[in-house]
Each structure stands twice: as C-alpha cells, then as structure tokens.
Length: 136
Image 1 (cartoon, rainbow, N blue to C red):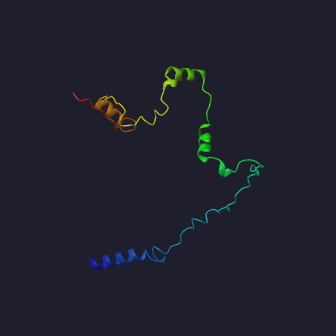
Image 2 (cartoon, rainbow, N blue to C red):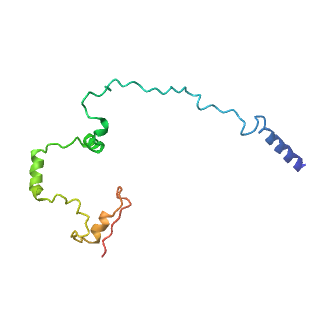
Image 3 (tube, rainbow, N blue to C red):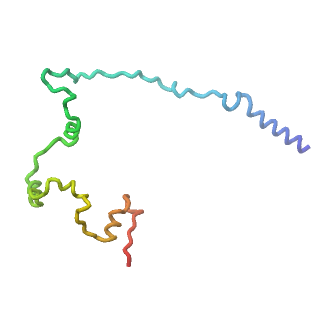
C-alpha cells in the first residue's frame, strides 16, 4: 500500500512537469525585438574644408610634436614668481643632461636607512594595509 501511494505521488508530480515540450523547448522573448536599432549613419562634418594651396601636407607634420602641443599647449612664458624661484634654485648652473644621469650606477647615493626604504616601498592605498614597524 505504501509503495502504491508513493508511486501515485511520483507519477502526479512528474506529470506536472510535462506539457511544454521540455525544459529547452520553451518560448523565450526575443532580446533583439525589444527596440528597433537605428541604422549607422555618419553625419556630415561641415567644419572640414579642403586644404588651401601652399599649406604643408598632413604627412609632413611631426605627429609626436603635434600631440605634445595638443596635450601641453607648447612652451608658455614663466611668471615672475616662478622665474624667481627657478633662479634661486640654480636654474642656470644645472647640467643639461642631469635627468639622463640620475639613474646612472656611478651616481653617489646617501643611505637613509631601512625605515625610509620601507616607507617608500609601502603599498599604495588608504593606509589600512600599510604598516611600518621600527625595530627596537
């Protein structure tokens, strides 16, 4: 009797799953039919004009210099306070290639100790993970 009740319950449970063609054969909404996609159109640019006679060709322009000028605006005049600060720092006595020789192995370096090295090598962040301990 127990087996009969169990079998009837199993059959009725499994019969509720049928009727739709199975799990993989069901109706789904078409995700591309939600909205109509507009066609790709390149709008006309009325600001473009043909090059004037006698102007340099686009290939003759140095692209790296043009990019630097676009990013930084080219050389700008220094203010009076900036010029005074640079002169006080010894702008005239600085060697021309000093930035190239800064990482040279022959450069004299002062050892500031392990604490300074640990501070410089600390991970970036808000300070929650960065810890420094001074040896006793």
